[in-house]
Image (cartoon, helix red, strand yellow):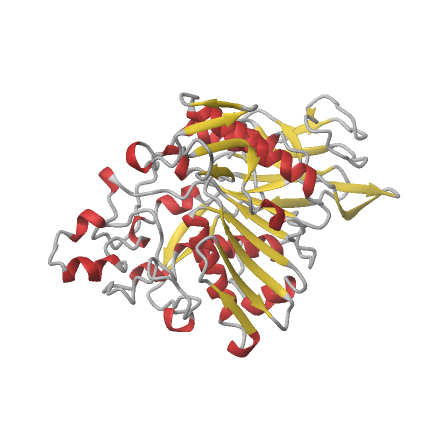
Length: 438
């Protein structure tokens, strides 16, 4: 932790503490110590011990104490009323994987006919199923089991959009399969034919779950007079007009920015009307993130829409190669490799936005799951065997995830953000930490 904790406070009305929710997250600063630290009363303005860097709208609040336990990532807000009340804020991303040999996945491949070959590990011949029997357990609080019918009720008359690269497509397939199992086949429409747009529509709930392919979030233009692939840093993906009005938004970007050599997608950057070949990638990435953030701030109604940004989904290559691995990593010191500078850019961007964005911090919980990748159990396996190219391990996919599998947990945490709010208002998740400082 970095000494700052993002929390949601309660309002004071008529000398009583109510359940009314502040419209933004506040930032309470404290030393990294375990004892409580008293904060002075404040009235919607800056005061000692409180930072308000983003024009946050605040209600009048009396003095509070905050007790922080860095080892668990938990915070306790202690209100100054008499008697003292305590409310724990649950960091659902801090916990451990628990094995249950009797457990069954939330669905199986046969129940999800549109599941892609890329992630259908059992259909592609994977012999073990142990990777389906691990459950993520948060420390100190209970994560509700995913309930498809309940989530459909919460999404009634609403749109969910999932925007990003193939890992977000992985997450879309997971959520689509999770919901599909609770709907009679005649009452659901699924379109997965288009590589850049996929949708599941639950007709009786008038809700949709949509995927938009946009690995950079900004526009990659390969059809221009120069004949070059230009990454336009000041212009969002062409699909952005279709994002408007969605009630739940899940974004990601990252992996395509670190591609080098033949797999690098761009040849030139465009920024401020100028074409550049040698712009630093971190600088380009930050410009692109600012373009995305500006669009969100200008186009999203925070009283209606909940916005998530999913953190980096780790790959397992090199010393923690996923090939022929059937158990999670238990070494707590293991950290997946990805440029820290880019992670910090994402966090810094979110902190600077006027629209609240929930950081779906799945990196740490996912980096343990070296066992959950497709490895050689992809559609390509049949082709290679037919060609008698038996060194299949060379082609192991250690980036994407089998389904059923890990992305079901990501979506369970999205669902938990709705359920643990004790509200049908999907934009309220007051008991959870989606802190970009962890």
